[in-house]
Image 1 (cartoon, rainbow, N blue to C red):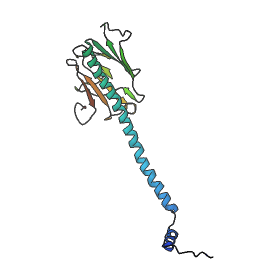
Image 2 (image 1 turned 30 degrees about the vertical axis):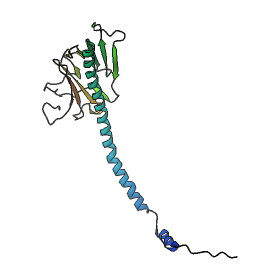
Image 3 (image 1 turned 180 degrees about the vertical axis):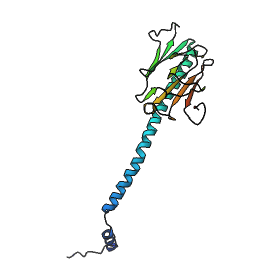
Image 4 (image 1 turned 120 degrees about the horizontal axis):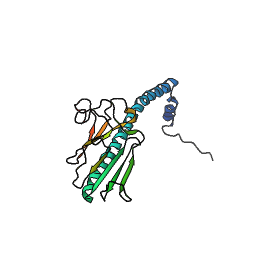
Length: 202
């Protein structure tokens, strides 16, 4: 018995469609590659800038919240809490001075922090602080790199901390950041550099 092959509906139309399709030409491929290259060339620098801004913002916020923590602990524990910066090692530590002797005894260390590699306690020459005075040190509380919060939340001295991304040292950049501490109240404020205002912080 012979089996009769029935025609498949629409087969000829589908075959013609497949035969009409051609692959990409070399010119089309080169064009697409060139466009992708341009897009990547534009995207990579923008991504790098975004990453650097993310790094500096993250580190400054960490310092800001740690200063707030020190003030809060001082009030809560009814004793001095000291925050000491080291602009050479790019570190700072928080010392809960429970016995008031000014020495970090066993069990009095709250935390010790190292900045990320690309962020530094630094400033560019000619920079003004939030009061319009010329900056002379990356960290200064009346000439000291230590600020002490007392049981009332007040600070031992007013002062500022200046921070830069390593790629911004020596150049004017709106990524420069500062943290200020006010002696009378112990308030801690966060500032971003803005050359369009005077003093250049907002």
